[in-house]
Length: 319
Image (cartoon, rainbow, N blue to C red; front, side, top):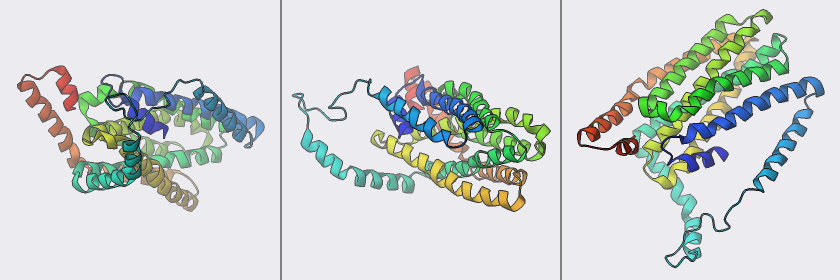
């Protein structure tokens, strides 16, 4: 829900974009992982629940200080009065309308279909390290604090990409971001598969985790910007963003958690799983190698606009 709200409030920004706002959530995730790891090491697993409830309460108290309008979201008539009847009718038919429109997009829009498959496979593989890395660290006698530190390091690697994501998107396009992020992910998994076998090699995990932040930032912001460009109906952007969250985190990572868990139990270590994940993501890149045409079409439209005397603002709108 929060991710969709961020997307909705930043989709019209031409410079800051989605990535710079999303960056702060990642920073909080990394810091919270370190603090959570320290608390588990010192006070046991039960302390995490108190930690979570405390900060959720702080969040609620903080939100109470924000100003809001009681009429937020309601359309106004020319006389300034709330058009309650239209709002009620829209609410009654809204869900059905959105579902039907999303179905049409998936049926008629080739890029959206390819994108949905690609993001699901990325979620399936991305959860590999998230699921197996803590188990691997524990098997190599690493602490919970070290496990949290690896998460923080991965977040630090993604901050520059999140911050400059809009500029990267405008320069290279969304599919380029997704492909490069996927390639870095495969390299990361291959390094984990071949370089980490005993306790003395735990330090390599910290270095490799820098790749995770870069990977996630490129894939996620590229996916979001791709969605923003491909969906012409502005009323559907938040709903499609929710769909992408579902495909990546629920479908892809949900299936991935079960599958990679079985792989770990079968081989009794994570290295074989990392290697298999790298193969899957490379196949994913190969499957969608022809989708560079979407980036080429975007560049062609940009050149045509320049040739016809378009302004820099026109170029941003085209992208």
